[in-house]
Image (cartoon, rainbow, N blue to C red; front, side, top):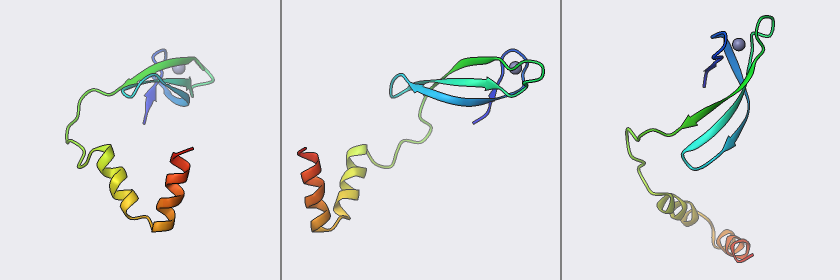
Length: 83
Ligand SMILES: [Zn+2]
């Protein structure tokens, strides 16, 4: 993903991110034009809308992954889930 510095329009590097919700995260950015600018800033990345819906729900994806496990792997997973 490309972030442009709002001060000098140069490319910026995403140095870290902070997930605020399932839909929104803050991106901490550093301008790569260190000779003239070098600003650091925060941009927000937000989900807008779906173009194609996911093929399966999260639960269906998890179920299909679990169904591929061996009996031993399922038992190990159950032990982990029960803490
Ligand atoms: Zn800049």
